[in-house]
Length: 120
Image (cartoon, rainbow, N blue to C red; front, side, top):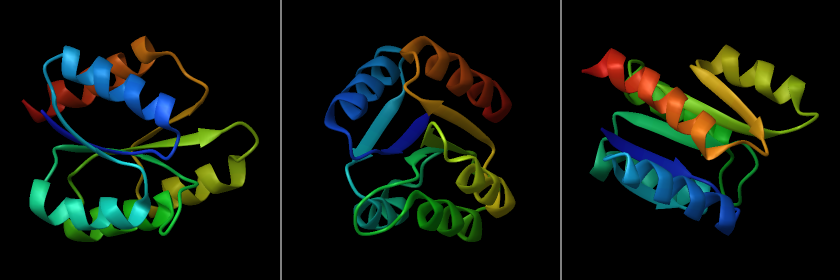
């Protein structure tokens, strides 16, 4: 499965890249929302994982763009504790799932696997 990850925390990003690539996924990543928006066109992912709070363009902007581009592409939103109102906005915009940071790489892998089974 082709996965686009947008996350501005280097350690979190590296951990997600490593785990998902280890599981056999093709992963493209970026550390800001603006770059994620440009990579969407070229990469055409099967799944998008985006942090909400990022430089240049928010995860909500990435989510909104993905759903306008192709509403069938699932989007997992990452959020820090205490951002319930933003998570609700994300679901209103079409988010398919969310994970609260910090999270376990195993939890992420299981959630991605669930979407992978839907796409296959």
